[in-house]
Length: 447
Image 1 (cartoon, helix red, strand yellow):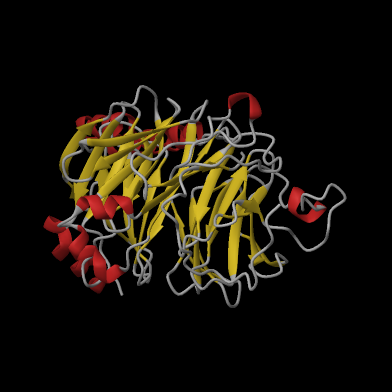
Image 2 (cartoon, rainbow, N blue to C red):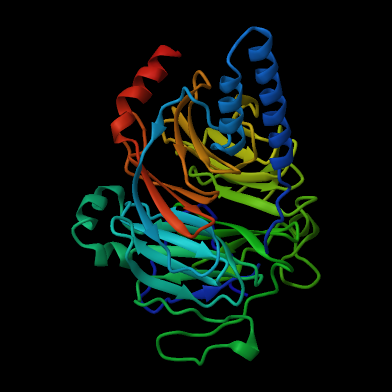
C-alpha cells in the first residue's frame, strides 16, 4: 500500500494527465418518515379551525378552505412568507429517481446522481447533457465535486466551458459499495473497476490498474472531497467511514498498525452505532466531521484521526453536514425536523431551526447570514440565522429528492439560483432576484 504523505495537511495536488478514474469502496439509508406525524398535526389544526369558526360565527367556508390548503397544499408552507417563482424546468434523461445533485464550484454545470446507476454532467443554463458518468453497477446515492480552478478564474471559465469542465473532479458513491473518482483532465472520463479482478478493465497506456484494500461492506450513502482535492471521505450503511488519499490512491493508515496490515483499526471500523449518512471536511484542514443515523455528529482530527468532539443535539438520523468557509461553524440537519448551527470552538448550539417535517438537505451561506433547507414533501425554506425567522419559500410541484445551491451569490450572501429535483425526475431552477428586496427588508425588520 502507498505510503502516507507527511505532513497530512490538505493541499492541492498536482494531477497528472495520465490519472483517470479510480474506484474506492462503499451503501444507502432507509428513511424513517415523519409524514404521519405531520398529517396528524394538520388534521388537528383543521379541526380546531373549523370548531373556532363555527363557535364564533365565522363562515364554514373559511374552515373548509383552510382544510383544503393544509391537506392538499404544499407541506411546511405558510401563507405569509413570500414565495419564489420557478425560473426554468429541465426534463432529466435519468430513468430512476435522482438522489443527489450539486452545482460545480463556478456555477456552470449541474451534476446529478441517480438510482439508474449513472451520474450526469449537465449545462446549468440550458440543461443540456454534457456527458454521462457510467461505471457503477447499482444506484448512485451521493456525489461531491470540486474544481482545480482558483476563484479568480471563474469569470474566465464562463467564456471557456471546456477548460472549466477539464478542471472538474467528481466523487460518486453507490449502493454497489464503491466510490469512484472522476478526473476530467482526460475527456471523456473513463471508470476503472479497481479491486475487482473479475470485472477489471483492460490495462492500457492511458490507465493503470491497481488493487485497493477491502472497504465498505454495504452501500455508500455519503461522500466528500477536501477543498484542495487531496482527500476523500466515504460513509456507508455499515456504520463506517473511510478517509482516502486520492493522490496515492490508498486508504490512509490510522493511528496503530492493524493485524491485517490494511489499517482498519477498531476505532475506524465502527465510529458510529448506525449508518454514516453525512460527512464533510473542515476547510481549515484541521478536522472533518461524520454524522450518523445514531443521531450523533463526531469531529475528527485530520492529523491523528483522533475523536475531538461529539455533538449530541438531534433526536434522529443526520441528513446533512456543512462547514462554514472559516471552519468556525458547522451546520447539521436531521430527520428530527431540525437544522442546527454549532459553534466549533465551544461545541454549543448557536441557532436551532424547527420545521414541520424531516429536513432532507440543508445549506448555509458563506457569511452565515442565511440557511436553506428542504422538507420531506415539496417545500424549501430560507431562514435568517440571526432571528431564526422565515424569509422566503420555494414550492415545488412534486416531492423534492435533492437540492443544489448555485455558488453565484449576491454581495450579502443570497444565492442567485437554487435547483431541485423531484420524484418526476424533473430539474427545477428557482431564482431569488425578484425577491432580494423582500428578503433584505424582512431580515432587517426582524433583527
